[in-house]
Length: 274
Ligand code: ADP
Image (tube, rainbow, N blue to C red; front, top):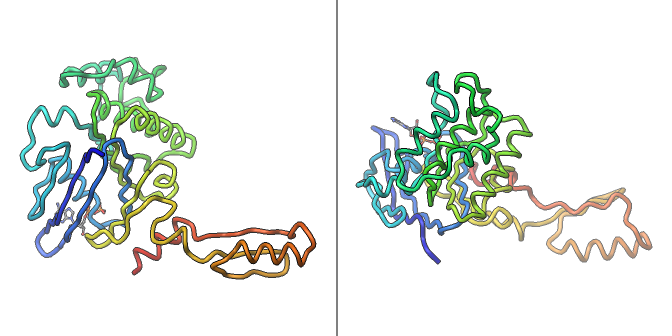
């Protein structure tokens, strides 16, 4: 296992506000890692420190083997960053802009290939200011990956997307992950974390309150299940036993049978309230 990101005891304060109050993280190379948490939890501060855009007060941080507090050009070229959309009004076209940014990297991807992968081929000749919000966001992602990064940071990548654009965007992220790119994303959307992430950390009040796979986070896999059927329901640690008993009682199929575990959202809300 190679570690892409290692954080120990990270802390950052703004005046009276302890934005990050002692975070430890290990993100493996090749992993998609999601940081979830309510507004103000300290997600952006943490990620901006990892990206080398913000100074920390305390803690050890290593990103691709380098301290982002002392970023080098070579290190920067190995990292892709997709920020929350800038609202500059750009007169250049999509293709011109991607080609221009490719020039900043030692081993850039092919601009037309990147444009194709983000689904903007038919918009390549359009000016950036003529793009829709979703297209503009895909352009941001194209700029994040044009340098062929080993590690890609995505800050709330699909805020404001319609459902179809989100699905397409998820496919793009999955493609990048399959090609071996390590991806760190912050999101408000639990379904997004569940669809994309190998592991999730929930941040609240500047600390990690839970960490795990989406399926097991916060004891989800071992939480009590609720068995529903026509005429009743039961909360139980042994849903299989309950279903077998019901099956005997109904002599076969159980009408309106459903076995329900807490959703990732149920677990998340419990964690951030705690
Ligand atoms: P999140 O990304 O989870 O919404 P942030 O990292 O943006 O959280 O913010 C964490 C806390 O730090 C919040 O209380 C926020 O108001 C505060 N904060 C963030 N950036 C600054 C800043 N530049 N100056 C002062 N306070 C800040």
